[in-house]
Length: 176
Ligand SMILES: CC(C)(COP(=O)(O)OP(=O)(O)OC[C@H]1O[C@@H](n2cnc3c(N)ncnc32)[C@H](O)[C@@H]1OP(=O)(O)O)[C@@H](O)C(=O)NCCC(=O)NCCS
Image (cartoon, rainbow, N blue to C red; front, side):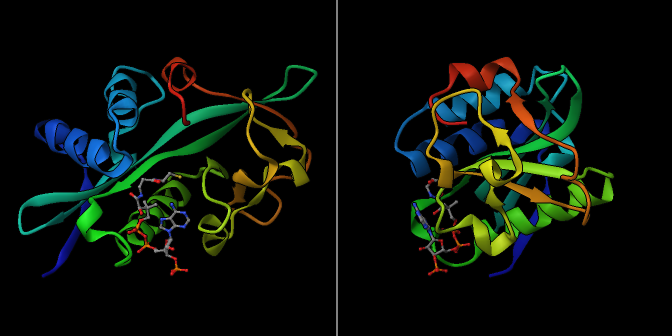
C-alpha cells in the first residue's frame, strides 16, 4: 500500500475529524482543526493528510503564530498541532512522514521557526529542542521538556525570545 501526502481538500474535513477523534480518543483536536480553518493563521498547504487507498489515515496541521518579546516585538513562527494517525496505523512512520513533509513545506515557504507542545520522546528526532533553552515560553502551563522549538535556519533563534501567541482556537483547546 502506498502512502500519499497531500494538502487537505474541502471534502477531507469529515475524514480528518474522524482520524483526529480516533487518535486522541476525544473530539477536542478535531474541533480545533475545524475552528482553525476559519482563521487567517490557517494555510491549506500546511494542513496535510496522509492518504492510503483513498482513505485518510493521518493528518497534521501547521498554523501561523507569533513569538512576542517582553518589548512587544513580534516574530512570525509556526505551530505544529495537532498531528494524528489512525490507531491501527500508528508506529509505522506515518506521523513522521507527515511531520517531515510539513517541515519541508514550512522551509520552502520561508518560515524560520516551528514550535510544538508534544511528547518529549518523539519530537527531538525532528531536531526539536526545549523552547525554554531559547527563552521561548508557552502562554499556558506546559512541562518544560514538552514545549519545543525547531529552527529551520541556523541563526533563526538568535535574538528571538518571548511568549508564543496562538490563534484563539488554540487557547480554547486543552492541548495546543
Ligand atoms: C503521536 C503520533 C502522531 C505518532 O504518529 P505515528 O505514525 O504513530 O509515529 P511514527 O511511526 O512516525 O513514530 C513512531 C514513534 O513514535 C512514538 N510515539 C508514538 N506515540 C507516542 C506517544 N504518545 N508518546 C511518545 N512517543 C510516541 C513511538 O514510540 C515510536 O517511537 P520509536 O520510533 O522510538 O519506536 C500517533 O501515534 C498518534 O496519532 N497518537 C495519538 C495522538 C497524539 O498523541 N498526537 C500527538 C500529540 S503531541
